[in-house]
Amino acid sequence: MYIKNLSFVPLREWGLPMGDIFLSAGPCSAESEKQVLDVAKGIAGCGISFMRAGLWKPRTHPSSFEGVGIKGLKWLVRAREEYNQPIGIEVANPKHVEACLEHKVDVVWIGARTTTNPFAVQALADALKGTDQPVFVKNPICPDLGLWLGAIERLYNMGLRKIGVIHRGFSTSRKVLYRFAPNWKIPIELKRRLPDVPILCDPSHICGKAELIFSIAQEALDLLFDGLMIEVHVDPAKALSDAKQQIKPEEFSSLINRLKLKTELSDDGKFHTRMKELRLEVDLIDSHFIELLCKRMEIASEMGELKRKYNISPLQPHRWEDIVVSRLDAGKKKDLSEEFVFQLFEAIHEEAIRHQAEVAVSLPK
Image: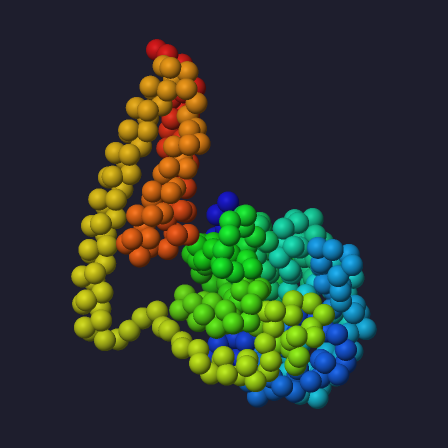
């Protein structure tokens, strides 16, 4: 699926406050009126576009804290009134949408678990039809770009134009440093397909640990994301949900002040001249790389012929294990990240198996 020609309202025209970047901050869950008001007070003056707080929490285990529900709306409305900052809430079904519209909630977002379900997304889109409600869509919890794009399209088809996305990482079976794998290639590809859609990063959920948030936040801005959503709690250690990934208001303020903004273009002639030279070098290397990959696949096809002749499976698990170990070791010696090398050779191996399988099932002439 390739969505194109979709026109979105720019973030600066959403009617929400915005400085150099779009910022959302607030607790993972609204726990009490005092907690909500204390956080609102703590982040006041930090240039917040809207204060976030979860009222309905989709949790893995029913024994976990699943949010205070609709009664928390009045706490957020009071916080908006007292500290003059818009409010945002996650919605997961039409009743949530109805409550938010009734209380004039400034922003709603669709969570990662909900984005995974097209039926649920369509129900939300139907409930939002005919409104001018700003909506963010978090990536599905599984690394599926199609589901993410499909959710955006469902909202768009209902007439919504103030649509943005939030990158919050993906589940993975591999051991990674973070709670959810950043897998930057997916939001980058989404942005390539929908260049006008606003995109935020949620480093809190990606990291799962407060001490890692700054690096991911900075990486998102380096990749020209439009803003950030960060979880802030007055006493993270006592939070009823996701305690390890929340930071205090003063830590949030410090983090925001340390971030460096990047630009896509420069007016400096020396920059353009040197960049053009370097890009030509990269293009030449990529050309050679493609030629080498073609040669590798030709050899893979020859292997497939040999395996078919001797009735051998295209998949050789022990050989694949040897490749993984040796390539990761070689990459490490060249200061390449393990994740990058693994993903690269995983893709190469998958293509090689495809070539061998095609040969294996082809009929003899």
